[in-house]
Image (cartoon, rainbow, N blue to C red):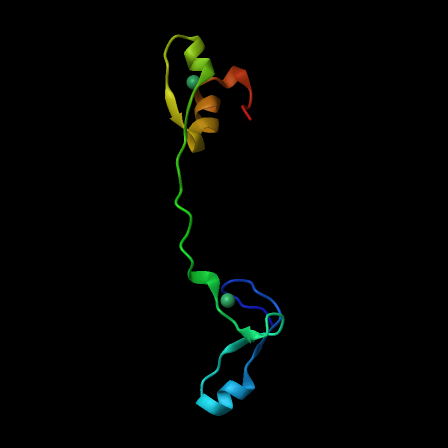
Length: 85
Ligand SMILES: [Zn+2]
Ligand SMILES: [Zn+2]
């Protein structure tokens, strides 16, 4: 079976552990050790880059746009310019 939380495969319920402790835990068959779920590892901090728009620069109004808003900016302000990739 697979772990739903972290996507690791080749897991089984540890029957032996259950008989000893009364608790279920997942066992990684490949690693031959208890499954340690790495679902809880901290997410990478999102760094928001800003770009200066070359089209705006060319028009003499330097502008910094968040990278994730750049496409939107191009579509709105420079419709004639096409997609910037
Ligand atoms: Zn897991
Ligand atoms: Zn622009």
